[in-house]
Length: 330
Ligand SMILES: Nc1ncnc2c1ncn2[C@@H]1O[C@H](COP(=O)(O)OP(=O)(O)OP(=O)(O)O)[C@@H](O)[C@H]1O
Ligand SMILES: [Mg+2]
Image (tube, rainbow, N blue to C red; front, side):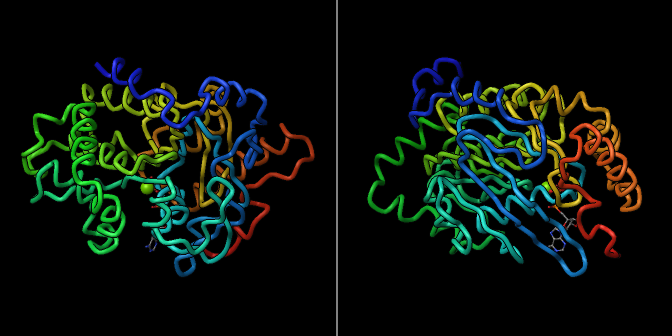
């Protein structure tokens, strides 16, 4: 039972989870709001692809010890933002820190060693390696075997035995222990998601970043995954996850950050953000599975930011009209 395992792993990082969650009550429900104990702080992080501005985040802080959901329509820049802050991609500009230490220019494997580990939107397991070998090698061919070996090799070199024990404990926890010797290629989509999450924990991360952990997972396994994500928080890890399924977001998030067209356009607890009609209309409604046309997105954004401006008086708002949104995008 996951509950038993939670207890066993609780306080892994010494973070007071209840205090971290309670502290969020004091945080303003607005883009870029200051957090009482941020684990990640990003400033002016921008990434363009040709004429397209995929990410243009002025300021964002991720609270330590809680579950933060990063949501927004397809193409909002969520995955690109993940790639940037974990060192898998380089921004045009900007700075960001983890535990107060700048990560600008820091390679992905170093970021992982520092305690900030991510999973991928398109799940990456090595099909021709066993489940246990996947845990040990830690790998995603797509991002270069060398890099990924580098991410995990130092960890493994000197600690073979204890790491096998650690892998087994994680496989047990993620209900994959019976698959230990099976090829990862034989796992279902959901089991691969579990394996990827389990593998991320081999590095004992403080911050776990999950890019659409529930996508393509059957309903029964979804419940199990939800439990696992909550258990990460309960043992003191910080979780930042991208998800389109708003029931999931509502169920497990302490805080929600909404991105659209590369920018952070709203923040708040799930009920506040999701009860916000402009957010529902713009990002959570029937559009979330489709690409919105740029024109439609711009219309929605303009309406949303007018409302945000109204709600926050004269406060400048970090949304489309304050930027070069007028620049032609195709
Ligand atoms: N390597 C790339 N080259 C060119 N354009 C890219 C590249 N990566 C991302 N983009 C573009 O940047 C924008 C943001 O993409 P990104 O994948 O970050 O969005 P997302 O919010 O993760 O979307 P989804 O919810 O569909 O996963 C999109 O318009 C996308 O087409
Ligand atoms: Mg994505």
